[in-house]
Image (spheres, rainbow, N blue to C red):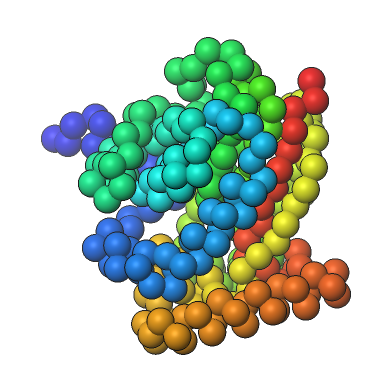
Length: 247
């Protein structure tokens, strides 16, 4: 008979709360196109943070937490996945608290900012925002998949499952319902992210430094072009949302 905690973890994989990552392959991908892209994504997240104390929710491998610390923020990380916590310690020397955001072990107003990097599809967002309203003084920064029609089709084709996927409007409405006001939304990643394979599939372009750099340059041009046309939210794979606490 399996131990109860093992059964619980298996259910989380089945529900799409956890993903069965290939950690060996991802360590390599973080040194190629996806790693370069993740660095740019993290820079966008950091640019949207105005506070000093940051809670990194669902820290995963820990590369965002590492960059937050290097930038000078006081960072606390949480993630319930023991496998991710172990790797974060091994790769980046990041100590992650074994906790879920729905029942965070923190006092009221403990942090200026909470960052949720590709996390909101793995949690009950309503309960999360209620808890964040309790422990966050200033703002929430969300970096997440922009669930366009194309992204939904791709997920269906590769049979990729998330626990609670939601449209951008859902996140905006929920934040405003529980005492936050959205200040900015920036869209990114049209070409580079799908070609990088993300953390779930293989890299689809050659693992050549100059080709990867060209892909990123072209992606930046495309993002600027579609922003001018006002079509970013319909073609970009990711969004970065900043919401401030108003009540």
